[in-house]
View: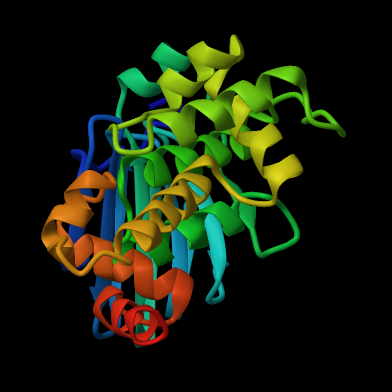
Length: 275
């Protein structure tokens, strides 16, 4: 190191000093929920992967020469190869991390910042991080939902060009594809190819115009299709889940409850009682 100090341990992807409570790994990101139950001083270390931490609660301090107190609902970006120390206060701490797997920035031709960044809510880094955590914790993080929030995080980090103020012509094609192929495993790369734009740009424009992510939109399209099928009592719920693109009946039920505040079975009973 230029300053002559030992960089400390280099933590691999998915490796942390705090106990890991739950994980979700995809080809592009590693998602981890961490909980440190008591006070602890963590030695100086680096991370193999660039990552975003969303502090969810407790006492948490991070930095190197100077420790910054990160209050709950603060997001921090740490580039790979930059050493830092952390201190967990008396109340312990729990947080959610999003690690960007190495090939992702290269594949998207985006350059992540080389310095640490913090967002206590006034910027655009915290909110996609919290949305991704909500989907992760609620077990509704299907592939396009994860893709969508990750692209929004990358847009915030790379200061990608501002989104259009009005709907561009390609947005209609993207939405039409999702309506036509809602049962398929659509990814952001597929939609970006359809639109002829960068995936990060697509994510920003979709959010600006539709007030939701492509993943949210697809969940609504799938749920509407399921509502139509639920009118026929001959169709098993597991079959409807598969037919509409959900991972399984449990995933179908979670998304349906999130959007309608009831279960598919109860919804079916209500509709059939009025036929």
